[in-house]
Amino acid sequence: MNENFSANERALLHGQDVPFEQLPSLSGWYPVVARIDKLWWRFFGEKRFSEPFFYNSVSSLNQDKRLCVQTAFNALDTFENSLAPTAFIFHTSRCGSTLLSQLFASLPSCIVLSEPPIIDSYLSLYHAQPGQNGAEKTLRQLVGALGQRRFAEERHFFIKLDSWHIKSLPLFRKAFPDTPFIFIYRKPEEVLASHQRQRGPQMVPGLVDPALLDLDSEPLMPGELDKYSVKVLRHFFKAACDQANELILLNYSQLPQIVWTDLLDLFSIAPSPAELEAMKNRSGSHSKNAAKFTGDPEPAAYRTGNELCAAVYPYYEKLELLRSEQVSIQGSIVSLSYPSK
Image 1 (tube, helix red, strand yellow):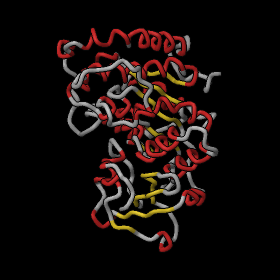
Image 2 (spheres, rainbow, N blue to C red):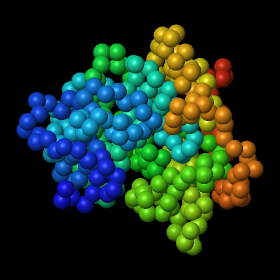
Image 3 (cartoon, rainbow, N blue to C red):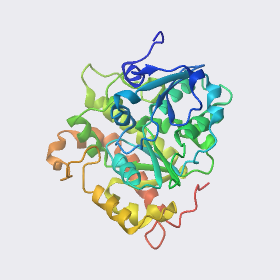
Image 4 (cartoon, rainbow, N blue to C red):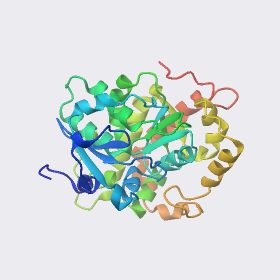
């Protein structure tokens, strides 16, 4: 590979290279990395995306299925049998978004792509050259390639985005003017506590493209990871408040029940009794593995989170107020007319 790939991209492209000319079609191939004039794809065949994250799906491929191909962007023109996205899931991280995507993924009628890296790769290109022409069309085509309909029962298609993609919501709205956008959030000190236990890349300076984050310029001392994390959280919550008219707001506290009390009807998903029971059973396990979920540590384990998150709380409280205004008199979000303008 003569491209300047990151470690994550090299892992995505670890496989046997196949000449594009030898392929009868790109059915079963999914884009994973973008450059200005090139795309790289991985072959999944008929494998369903049931793992918590796209990277997990890549890791689970059999050795003989680890195939890669490189194409120009015009290869995106070849996809015809794709589902339009049912909804995009934005979130603050560590707030139940993986649980939500896993519950939908448990249904045979749903295609669920959880943080597909091609979206991050393309958004980095977009924000490096924000005035480029055709960005909305390219994003639609990339999403179309991810929404390939490979099984007859598939009717619905969800993409869970990375938490830092909230900055790119205007581009998503231009590309998908009628698609619902969910935003899941949680008390900021609880999100921070989760990252204190295990840091996500967005909470470590330099691991996420700075062009995808709007952070204040206040300097930090080396090692002040909690303060940096609060900067990032403030950006996520503020961006959601600024764009709340585009969002269906969900609080972590509403999960998982709101999925079967409201969201299935909202998205016209009708699981069989057995499928609904399987979905409810999945909700009792940890979202990222099969272990039984027993709850998060008590608030005493949050250390200095409450004080640090004081700058985030006005935005959290505003989201709570806006969420209450979205709910109908019957206490349901099903009656929402979406998107609201």
